[in-house]
Image (cartoon, helix red, strand yellow):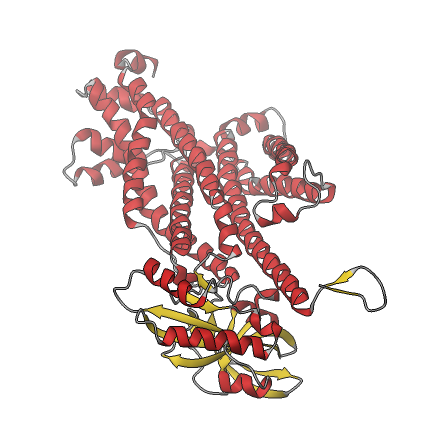
Length: 564
């Protein structure tokens, strides 16, 4: 710090302190932006899934009430009036949901923002943004109401019984019987596939879709969570494609003499260290890339090439080639393969972008906006004469204990030996890792509730068929097993469709977030976890079926058939 030469006692920051403050601000903004992108992805997925599932439930209720519409028209109501009456329930539910969402948003506002953004939030506590809440409430009401309009129109075209005709379960049962399964399995599978017709129909297709969405959401959460854990545990994915960095990337701000001193000391220590297999010198400079300020990273080959991780393309091999971080490419609106211009007061160089790199935290990523340009030392020397290596990326020999090698290097060169740390973007993602699980848990509850509703409705509406099965010789246990097979079949169908869909969704969501974080995208589908989850899903489906199965097993065929 220095004082104002005009006599003001207020201390002025040195130039390097100003740059470091701007760099820290840029890194914080970038970390918050990555977290915001992830939250938008999760929120959008949650909104679509909840709209789909609850919209399906409302449509089911409207369809179930279709038999009453004929009676309403018979007493004088017009088709338009019947349609409005059908939509009234959906409108009430949508209005209640919109108001509930507003209340939950206001109550939960003290919990947000999370991560680094929470430290930067000047006004904590309850927050009421009237404009945003109003837009959200109107959107919830409009979307849910609009979703059920097609179902309401279909339900008011005429008699459901007349339109759908008689049920044909015998054809399905006949096809399943050819599989050589026990009788309870045959009838249970047929009940799961056949939705029924007329007023006795049950919502098999919509229930299957709901359970598929729940399974897909849970699978996507597993995939995203496994990918995030892999990122957090693997330094190469966020740029640390080496064991340690020796030196100080900020020494260049104190002048070439200081940087040269640090660089020479580190170079001598590394050259004489038997634990070191390869090391590459790095010089830093400030440049303009296509009119945008960026940090140049000049590569000076010392012993081998040890460079940050590549996300796309390759590292520069010629003096007219560069690689950039994703943030730099986005800000200058370029892609790998495009030409661009690098400028400093000392000169201008026309180059071609050949790769996209991940910036290692605490070495390259702490730059304003995250714009880093990797280029050959000869190219940097044309733009910034006198640039010299002040930092070295180091890779140990195979078989060397990293902790022991680290201690020996610190003894040789002092505390300027840096090990891998996770960037702020990754830390912020870890702070919101619970969000996909919360979404999956919500959808799982909805899916299980829908499955339970289907089984209860199926047992109640098919009691005549179950009574016939008992008359034909089914025991109480076999009738209960029939319902269990129905639940198992629905669960297996949902798994067969939902797991591939969930893996694809989770991988896509991860790629979006990884691209925003400028890290190597390694989406992982945990096969063992998914296999265990599939077994647990089938078991839970049978637990949900236990109640309806017990009720079905206690039906008295004589009483039911006399009533029929």
